[in-house]
Image 1: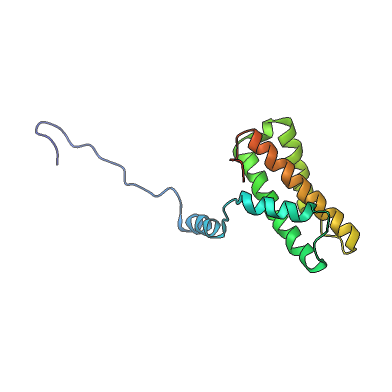
Image 2: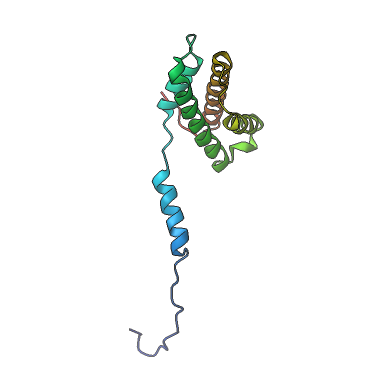
Length: 138
């Protein structure tokens, strides 16, 4: 309804910002999203860096979880622009490199790789916490 004495103006029809294919992509990403869990990260880091290495059957699943933690930490670093910090940038680069390396088959090499994953996850987590990109995990 228009006010008396005013002339109605044409309004462009609203068009959605995303088409159905793009909305499907967003929905699928939201469904596969996993929230960052600092407590789980610290538990996995502790298991990887413990004096007693994890049982052989636990090594591969632990490595996979640590890779997931690293992926989330790198995403947080990029989203919060923490990569502007030299230390955070170096840690994120190292994290990306370690994520792509396969778990060695030989037990000692696999344990060493697991410890590297745990160490870098812990260091990146600590750096992001120091930069206030993350809350401190208990």
